[in-house]
Image 1: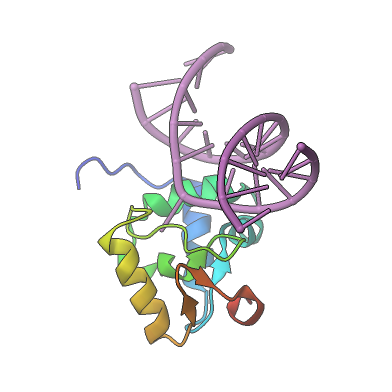
Image 2: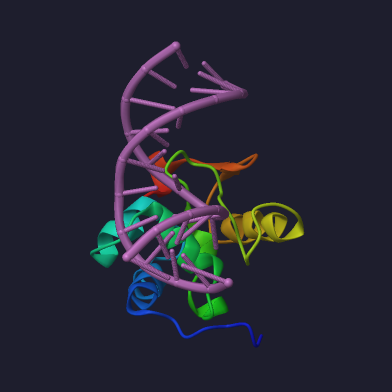
Length: 107
DNA sequence: GTTGTGACGGGTC
DNA sequence: CGACCCGCCACAA
C-alpha cells in the first residue's frame, strides 16, 4: 500500500509487545498499552489497525478487555473477523461466538 | 496550534 | 443484559 506512513516510536513499541504474545494465548489492548510503557487502549487499536507487519505481529491475539474480538486486518466485522476466529481456534483458543474466555487465555 | 476521530475502558443508568 | 457518557492517548488534516 502506498498510503502507508512510517511507524512512529509508539507504534513500534506496540508491535514489539504484540509479537511476544505466546501461541494459544491472547492479550488485550489495554494490557498492550501498559506493556508498551505508554499510550492507551485507543492508541493501541489505532496502531494495530495500521499494522504494517502483518503476519509477524499476530494482531489476531489481541482482543478487547471485555472478551470480544475487536478487529482484524483493518476490519471490525466481515470475513476478516471470521478468519480471526478460525485462527484463534486453530491455536487452541476457545472462541464462544464473538468472545474469548480471558480467565483462561488472557495471560 | 487546534480539531476531529478511533480495532478502547470503565462507570452509570 | 444493553445503551449512554466521559476520559484516555496518539495521529492526520
